[in-house]
Every structure is written in C-alpha cells, then in structure tokens.
Image (cartoon, rainbow, N blue to C red):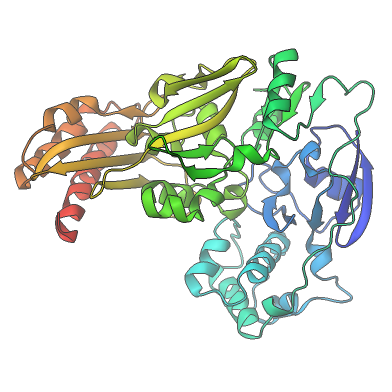
Length: 455
C-alpha cells in the first residue's frame, strides 16, 4: 500500500502494509526517532503525535487510517539545533530526567496549548494524564506547561498544513479486495455484503493491541472511522438521542447535547483513558469489544439504550443487554455495522450518575463501576435502573435491586436497603468482599447526593 503524509510540514510517502502502525512508519520509514515506544498499548503516551490537529498515540493508529493525514512529531515542534520555547522551558524547569517520556509530554503539551492557549491547572493535569513519567515527577512538568502558557506559547503556534492531494491509500494488487476505505455508510454496507467477515476498523484502540497479541487477525479489513454519518450526535423526533457508532469519547465529552441531557455519559467518556485515547476510542467499538471492564456499556445499560445495527438488507434495533451476549461476544453479524446508539430522552427531573473505582484516579481500568438512573413520582420510585461493571464477564443490570425498590417511598430507609440489596446481588469474580462493599456504598452515595442537592 502506498500512502502520502504531511509530516512536520513536508510531504512524505511510504510503501507499507495497511495495518502497519503509525509509530513504525515514523521511526522506521521516515527515520524520525524522537517518537518513542513504551507500552505499545496506548497507555504510556511516549509515542504521542498530533494527527490532523488531535493528539493520538501512534502505536494504535494503522497506516490505512493515517493515509493523507497531517502529522506533527516532536521534531516538528523543535530540534536540538533549534528547540522551541516549550522545549527550552521544559529544560529550564527541570521537567526532563531520562528523557524517554519527554517527547510525548511535550507533544501533548503543545497540542493542549494550540487548542487552549491559557489552560488552568486542572486542564493541564487532565491533558497530561495519558502521559506516564516515573522519574521526572509531574509537578515540574505541569509547572513547565503553565509557564509556557503564561508566556504566550500557545498564541504563537501556527496551524499545521496538509499538503496531501488525497486521503485515500493506493492498495497493491494483492491488497485490493481485502482492504477497503469507504466514504459513506451505504458504500460500507455494500462492501460488507459482498465481503462478509471483514475486520471492522474504527478507533482501533483495542484492535491493534489484539492483532499484536494474536487474538485477532487483520488480513481483511474495512475502515469506517472516516464515515461522517457515524460521527453524528442529535436529538431525533422519535424520543431518542442518536449517537453514531464511531462517535469518540472526546466527541461525547464535548457535545453540548450530551452534557445537557446525559451528563453521566459525558462524565464516563471523560474518565476512559487519557486524551489521546479519548480522541480515538468509539462508543460502537467499546460495545463490540464486549469486555467486562468496559465503562460506556455500563452507562448505556442504565439508560436502557438501544443498538441500531445496519446491513445491506436493512436495520435492526435491539436492547444493549441483548446485544452483548458474553465476554467478547455480541450478536453483530458478519455483514453488519453498529450504526447508532439510541438513548431514550431522560424524563424532566430524573437523576443519573456514573461512578468508577480503580487503582488510581486517572488512566485506570475500573475495578468497580456503577451507573444509575432514577425517576421519582410524588416521592416514590417510578423508574430505577442500576448497572454494574468490571465484576462479571459483561456488565449487568441489578434487576433484583431495581424490582425490590420500585414504588417504594424515597427515604433514609430506602437508601440503606438499596445499598444492602445491590451488595448482595452482585457476584464479583475476585476481591468479592471489597467489591460488594464498594458497590453498596456507591448506590447509597447516588441516593444521598440526590438528598443533598434537594430531591
């Protein structure tokens, strides 16, 4: 496969296989070795680059998706001979130790200051939360970014150019018929109908990890990430909020509609991985991965969401709990795509929340997660849904707890009973006592926050 890229303002090209990782193109084909590989799973941030204005981990971007894009690496920010002001400040503030993680840190900081030239301390910490550095210490790093912001670094950044004439890769004779980059949903569905069983590529935050481990093969694939219809978020006339299957966590987090009507979903999206992962991870991908540790499906269960599956022969709707049938198992057919997630409009005055507990605050897998939705009528429970994740092969609704509380008066006794029922209902595979206790406490917290804010 032949691709063109604009890298640090220069038009470059490479002949690579479709699933070659972007980091390997940058380091091996283009010989830009400032970008480092750490974990190879998108967790450490050492390989961070800016692609089309968004921070990404280059170890999780396949070449087929990088074709025609504009890439900024650490060399495009500054070189040893001509370092940028940001790099000078990092050095002067002692924000560099061994230096292995520093390129990714500086790229992430540059990306933040380009989009938000005057970030506050919380915004700086959040943007760097996907970059791990165990020897420098985060205080000096955050201090360096704050100083760069105060000295106007972000206001002086000029937008990266894109010199590519086409975003489409040119496949070899052996690749044609095995790899596809459709531009519309209809085109994608026709291809899947003619070539059922193609590996579907969207955000690829799990796919490239799975292919490297041998869990998944990628010798036949279709890239749907660039299809505009799959990135739509809108309120329909049918009483549902529609979320395209390739909507990213970042798009959820920054959607005014989601923040207004589904704040628990926005908060969940914000807590899943670091910014570079959030820029790529998709709601449809999180569902189709069907991992017990996935966070977005927990919230979708609590919202009683539907999954709209599209195929060349039409569409099918089903409930989220029916779509995910087991660990890494779904009802998705070989010729189907997750077109949309449909969430019923929350009732006025309803309450919702998402909680997760892990080994640390940022960039952590959930050990316990809980999503809640409540409607009250005359101080009685009218609608109640709880969903728990990370304690069984797939997220589960706490239906026995819900049924026991339906129609009951909302008071202190109900709060205490709800916590006890939830703790009793879940069956964690490990750390049983801890997870039961935390789940019960989170259920109580949900109700107690309603009281504190005024029911």
